Image (cartoon, one colour):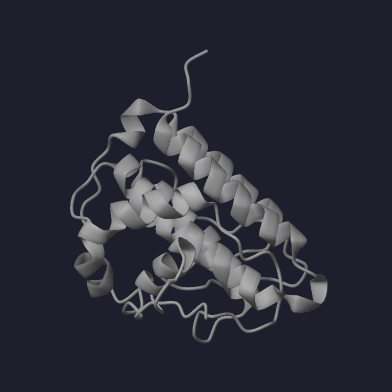
Length: 201
C-alpha cells in the first residue's frame, strides 16, 4: 500500500485535532463567543465546514450542498446551522472528502485560479492556508468552550514557517486579522497565533 502524502498526513493530524475539540464541546457552550469577532463557537465550526466544501468544489468536487444540518454560504462566512445539527458528523465528512482528494494525484495537483498564494496546486494551498485555518480555529473553538488550547507543536512550526512568505497576500484577502506583536519570550504557539492576528495572552 502506498504511503500517505506528506500534505495528507499533516492535514489528517490537524483535522483530527479540530474534530476532537468539536466532539468535546459541552452542549451548553455552542453559543459561547469566540475570538472570531461576532462568531460563536458554533459559527467557527460551521465556517470550517463551509470552507472545506467550497475548497473541495474548486478542487474538482461537486458544488457545496447542505448536510447534517449545516447550510452553505460564502467561503469566508459562517453558514446557517439548524437546531440539532450534527457538527461533528458534518466536519468528519469534509475531512474524509479532503483526504480522498489529497490521495488523488490529479486533483491534488490542480492549480487554483488564484487566492492569497496565487495560482498554486491544491495540495500547496491545503498545506499553508488550510493548515492556518485548522490551527487557528482549533484554538478559537477551544478558547470559546474551555477546551484544550494546546496545538500540535510540529504543525505550528511547519505552518508558521510556510505561511510567512504569504503574509501580505493573506492579509489582503480581508479574511485574516493583522498580526499582533508577540510578548517578549513568547512560545512558538503564541508567536504563531499572534502572526495570525489572535491575542492568546
